[in-house]
Image 1 (cartoon, helix red, strand yellow):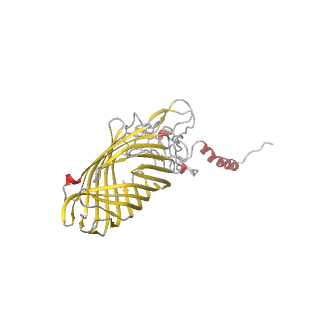
Image 2 (cartoon, one colour):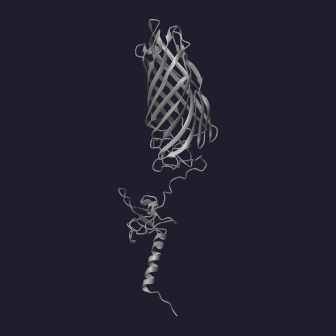
Image 3 (cartoon, one colour):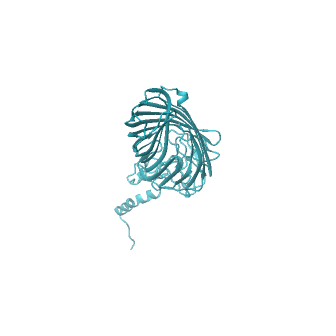
Amino acid sequence: MKKTLSPIAVASLLLALMPTCFAQNGYLGPTSPYNASTIYQPTMTAMSVFQAGGDSDVPIPSDPGSAPAMTMPAPNAGSITPMDSVPFSSGPIIQSPDMSMPIYQDSTTWNAFSPPDGTDPFLQPGFGAQASPYAPYNPYQTNVPPQGAFGYGANPAQPYRFGWQNRIDVSWLPGGKVTSAPAGVTGNQAIFGVDYDLAYGAPVLPNWVLNWTNQFAYRNWSGPEGTLDLPDNVFRFGMDFELETPSNGPFSVSLGVTPSINTDFNSDVWKEGFQLDGRGILFWKLDQYWTLGLGAMYWDRVNDRILPFAGLIYRDDYWEWQLMYPEAKVSLFLGNEAYWSKWAYVRAEYHVESYGVNRTYAGVAADDQIEVADYRVLGGFKMDTGLYSWFIEGGYVFDRQVEFDSATPGYSLNNGFIGQIGLRY
């Protein structure tokens, strides 16, 4: 006996099959009652929507505000049908990712906490086209931003930031007791400082980068007392010019020169306050993790110094070891929170400042040059988005020596605390 379905049964069966059929054919639109998963679909342009079937060219609808519609060959697989004529729909709905985007290299160290998030907006279009620092993908190209060309985290590619950048640091060294001083010099000496840099980076010459930094520093000295009278305030005005080659091969070079005026404005500015520093270093990338730096720097102070500017740098997905002299730093990546990359670090440095001053010793005033030298070890915490960052750190300062260019006897300061905060944007 032939069985038949009642009209009610047929209607129930069709209603049950409708969601499946719509989903299989890409029929879920923003107005569809079956659109429970639409919020998880990627939002792309109409250029990624193609008509299914056939090898002929098909019209591609224009996106709002873009050029008129154009045609493209239909793909052989994975295509989606526009939904203009489908019930419960209002146009092309399900869209595929932009397959013109390069794939992030498996051969690079990639941090699971820091997926690629686009290109660096400060990179100049076209620069580095002949020798990309991050071959085989060029982060300087236009139109198609390569995935993974810029990111924040432990070890993403780190392209140059071109354009203007501001750096502000505030430091505080509480009063250190004067020791090993000549007769009559007593008390403590505290130092409060503010440093401000206005830096500009730009490509110059084939495959060279120029970093030009305008520098300002202010120091407030409290003490010492007795027969030695130092100015309360001293200032520094400098310009740092740095030429570098991007790290697009096993070798790269960095060269810098820094003329500056360091004065209390009461002494001979050019005779006592002018300084000219210089540096140069060659970096040799040994492998994916290790880089060797070999160079030297010259510091124009009361006691002129030629120092090694050298060491090893190690970087992986969590650590960055800058085992350099005269400044070393070990950083640990703590993960990302929202748009912030978090770091904890320890650093050490040899620090020397020098100023032209008008000082009074034993009742005699004279123009002189003073030098303040010390070693510092600090621990800190840094938050970084790439576009701006801030840090806070504190530590220990020791082997503090104060010397003069004239016959004025120098002295030492007790070891003590140092604290600093800084902002980059």
